[in-house]
Image (cartoon, rainbow, N blue to C red; front, side, top):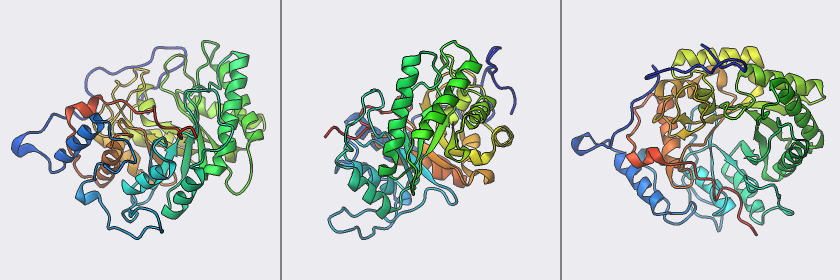
Length: 400
């Protein structure tokens, strides 16, 4: 895997271009315009105009990414027939629910996504809903009707399972337990949470707190036909972040099992932008192969259940988490294509968290993922697309 950052030493960085990095994408002009470049610019114009997700003025996908129309259930809009984004594995996207819960599922279907990740509640608030959102039954029905899954719930950003403050630790456990409790109503297979920061208390202490929290949350979580898996996401390392290395993630899993957590209900999510920020090189096929081997050795590939598929705006080893459109950032084409097609990762569910997911770039990045997996060249992006940030303001269900 090359060098990875340690907790006691400096984080390695690499100057200059990475072998797997693609150059910045210029604005195409004249005869050099790619057939889909005008589509990407149309998406960008729609984004700047504030076109809401789920509106009647949704940006259309390029013709070669559309499917034939199918018959929708009575009373529901006609949508394209499902077309898996990838041949042998599930690819989804984190989509906002604020414009309508059923509309988010239909949007996933429309852009060719197999799966969906959502916020079940406000991601930057401690208070949780007293009652399920009124749109939840329609969301669940459309999930079943359109065959979208697995469903993942992204837990609140406020949860810090590794922190030393007893009150905040308890509130984080309660917050995550609430996310796990509502997961069956969403039909969610996964609840993914950031491991958090030990806040200077040290790696060993942080690992113990995360393990305690995971065991307690799982002990409270519902069991039944839809039993959610608690998924721990790796960190880019900023602010004493824990889970920056595969070894730290493995130690958390082992410590949680020692505290009674069922190993079958505790998994791992690897965010590619976080890996890159943490100094783990994945820009070439060989580096991705090394990562897969290292993950298998550290905690077993069966525990790797999710990948957050993002390119990165930040340099390798920067400890910075800034997502970029697929193939337009520092990681580049080769590494992302290998992650998407690695034969030992067929069981993993992939979820896009790229910029502009609530402004039309969800379709663009699903199409780019499909092109990467197929070895096709990527359409150029307009310059302003490269400066977009992830839209998070409208991602939770609207208040009733």
